Image (cartoon, rainbow over all chains, first blue to last red; front, side, top):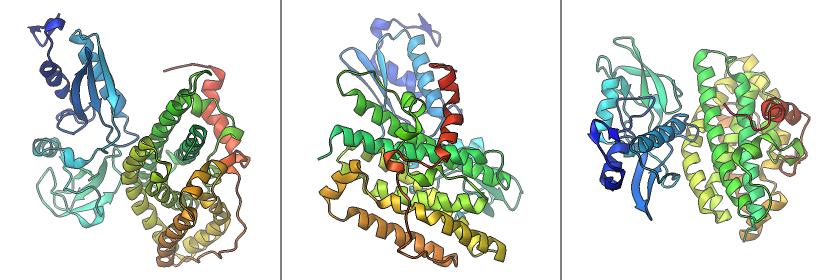
Amino acid sequence: MVTDGHMVSPAHITLTDIRKLVSEIPDPEIPVITIEELGILRDVCEKEGTFIIVITPTYSGCPAMDMIAVQIRMKMLEAGIPHFRIEHQLSPAWTTEWINEEGKKKLMEFGIAPPQGGTEEDLEAIHPACPQCGSEHTALVSSFGSTGCKALFRCEDCREPFDYFKCH
Amino acid sequence: MMTDQQLFDYTLMLADSTLIMSQRLSEWNGHGPDLELDIALTNITLDLLGQARFLYQFAATVKNEESGGTLVTEDSLAYLRDAHEYKNVLLAELPNGHWGYTIIKLFLFVHWQQQVYNNIQETKSDALAAIAEKSLKETAYHIRWTDDWIKRLGDGTEESHAKMESALIDLWPYTGELFQPAPFETFTAKARQGIFEEMKRSWQQQIFSVMEEATLSIPRDNTWMQSGGKTGTHTEHLGYILAEMQYLQRVYPGCEW
C-alpha cells in the first residue's frame, strides 16, 4: 500500500494522518486553495472504528461539492481505509468568514479578488483591488460571475476584468 | 405540534415551489438579453435548484422514517410524481413571458421565500432551520438583484413602464396563494395566530416600497386571488414543465449518467 511515496499500513492510520490527507484536497474550481483553507472541511473524527469526514456546502447549488465528495472518497480508498463516512453539515451555515488569511492571499495570487469581510454586501459600493495591477479604481460589471460564489468586476486602469469572491 | 405527514407535505411544498421556479428560469439559459444577464439568471436558477435539493433530501428522510413502503429519494420525489402530486405555488409554474414578466415573478417569489425562511422556526424542525439559515444568504443577493431590475424597468422608458404595469396586473392574482395556509400549514396558524397575516404585511411592506420607487402602481387589496397549487390543482402549464423535466427518467427508469 503506497501513498505519496510512503508505505502506510491501514492498521497504523491515525486520525492525524486522515486529517492531513483530507485537508490537502484542493478545491476543484480553484486548485491553489484547499478545502480546509476554504472552510469546507469542518471536522475529521472517528467513531466505533469508522472515520467520519464532515464537510459543509458553500452555495446550495455548488456543483463542486459533488466533486469534493468524490475526491475525499478516492483519497480514503487510495490510503486503503475501509470504513469511512462523509457527512454533510448544513448548520452552522458556511461563511466566507471561515476563509483564513493564507487562503485569501492564495485567491489574490490566482487572480480572484478575495472577500472583503462580512456576510453580505452592496457590491456596487465596494472597490476591490485589481489582482492584475493592484489598482482600486475598479467597478462592478455583474453581481453574478462565472460561478455562483463570484461577481464580475472590471479594472478601470489596466482594463482587465476579474472575479471577486462574494461575501457570504 | 406538526405531524410527520404535515412536515413532509410542507417541505414538499417548499421544494416543489423552488424546483419549478428553477426549472422555469432555466428556460432563459442561452436566451438572456445579454451575456451578463444570462449568467446572472442562470446563477440564481442554480441557487434555487440547490435549495430544492436540500429540501427534497430532507423530505425523503422524513418519509423514509415511516415503516414499510418503498424508500424515496430526492430523485424519485422530483422525477416520479405527477402534476396533481406537486405542491408548488402557482406563481412558480407561470410562463416566463418577456424579461420584465420574469423579473416580476422572481421579485414576488424571492421576497416570499425570505418571509418563509425567516419564520421557519414555527415548524420546530432543526433540519428546515438549517436549510433556511443557509438559503437566506442567497435570497439576500437574489432580492438585491430583482429589486434593482424592478426599479430599472418600472422607472425606465415609457414602454418598459407600460409593460411592467401590464405584467403586474396579470401576475397579482397569483400572490394571494403565497399567504393562504394549506391544510398542512395549519400547524403554524394554530401555533401562532395571525402569522400568515404578519408575513403578508411584511412582504407587502417590502415589495410596495420597491414598487413605489419604481413608479409602479400598487394593486388594490381586494383583487380576486387564484389558488390551488399547494394542494395539487395546477394550471395547464405544470404538465408541460414536468413532461420536459421528467421525460428521461420516465422513458428510461433508473437511468444514470
